[in-house]
Length: 300
Image (cartoon, rainbow, N blue to C red; front, side, top):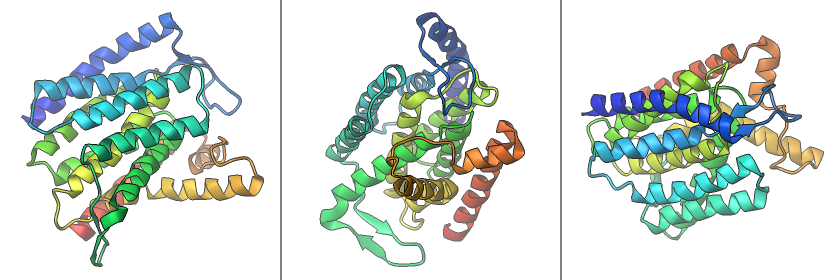
């Protein structure tokens, strides 16, 4: 069933994405090059809609009994705000407010981090801090994936690596089916998103994938009594987390605002050295896969 679900998700995305690309050009749903953009021509930016639609349609076809309604509801809010941001622009405070609202919807539905297993340490019960920690985690991951969406295939590929690891941990459960479906859709999308990209995730897509990474890491942690699952996405995305920390320090020092974009991220610097988007992204894939394997070996 898992292989069938993966295959259907992969095929649906492969068929639907070219249709969305053509429709985007007709409707003008394009990301036009800006001063800080790497791409030089208008690009379709509705990739998130493809992944979202295929994920939930395939989940309905291969109904596993796992309740996806909370994720579906929260995703609608993020996709709507992300599309608005892609088309007209949305300032940082409003974007953050929508992210907090989406996170709060999940918390209200019972998606809460109740405890955290410290690697090689004790189990920390959060108690009254469960809700704020959960909201912080979800918003943090959403913004992290959003900041990754600077090179063709980077955000989608690294998200896929996270989902593959989580699927391996929960392969025998109903949750594993949902993760296989999401992985299949992303991998098919990468055929159109890898350099030279024919379509972008857009803010709608990076926000959805960020929410999904945060949500499924919590859901997976609830099924694992041994592995510190919440640490796994942080290990896989370690380079990007360091990059965000450096960006915050850099922008605070320059007094440009934390949410002000620039071209000084680690992936921009590596791109400047190797002069190839493909090679840069593949290097990030390789590093994240090594970190993922190391995490699995240490904590399995």
